[in-house]
View (cartoon, helix red, strand yellow):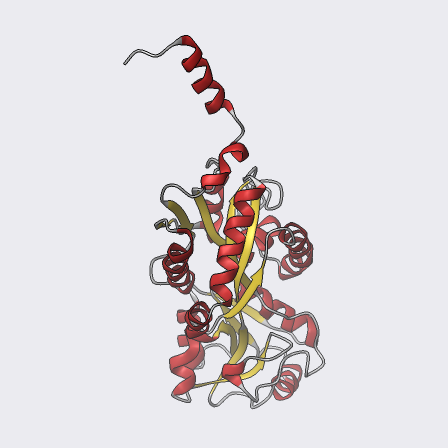
Length: 322
């Protein structure tokens, strides 16, 4: 097909327009969401549900691509290289954006400068678990640990994981001595807790639910200051006089730096509608997560504050990954 020089110049000019000038028809093709966790993990389940519900609002298919590894940093590095056009996103959060800068000495991205933070979706509430024969209260655990400085060991899902960092915070906040035992996943840590090889472990509720319901494990304190509905009656660390524990992990939608504001706003608005909807809330809470809708515009400051918050905690824990 032959085209005139004027038409060719016009087409070239249109192609050269900034992405934001063509954002009015977004989205007009399928959108990929990179999930930095294995298929079937809680974040993966939420990402797939989010894609289904966003389809109803944006009328485009969302394709989930799992890129697990290196504490979610592989997926983040992959996202950094993507085009900032709104068609490649990541369902990531605090592990790769807030904790990683202090944990990795050779991190290949800046969590604030290299990404557009679209919105948050959910928080993951953690609790401190002991075996059914373990201390009945946090005060009892602290008293026993002080009486026998060699007694207390706590497990985690690995060095630098939320489980590890909360355990390190517990040791420092209470003034007890404790040894950290890292495992390849929290399930292994909880199994050893059940067997009496360690004395405690922080965990997200979903991972401990079966053992909790069977009475094999007990929760003696929860991290969120407002408590956890599924563990009604279990005091928070704030209730017990210990500050700073809060929520250990959060998840949200992230895009490469340079995403046009119009696209970021559209994605944010649609996602927040999903999170606040009865169906969205139901799916999030079914995994014992807490809906956490924060929109585009407030997240850059939020993530910067989270990086600042976790840096001294990671340093004090001694965790480092090269």
